[in-house]
View 1 (cartoon, rainbow, N blue to C red):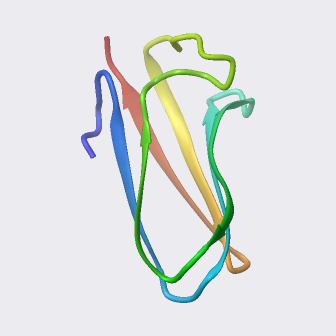
View 2 (cartoon, rainbow, N blue to C red):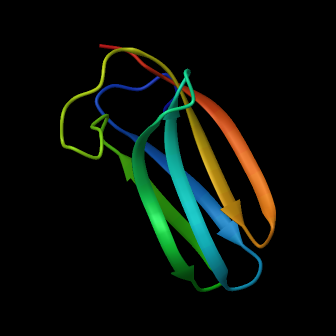
Length: 84
């Protein structure tokens, strides 16, 4: 939330068991824009914030992006929109 967002958005998620978590932002071409999380995390509620910047620190353009989370052998995806 929020979605659409400007200048940042927060991604809330809950882990039922401790596991490795990968949370990555992709553009609509399928290229990685930003890796938010790539680590082992304990069970419970968690948050990650994306400020609309890429891994190299540059501001990305307005448009749709995919949030992809992999954990415990499961995959979750959601589209988000950055508006400037």
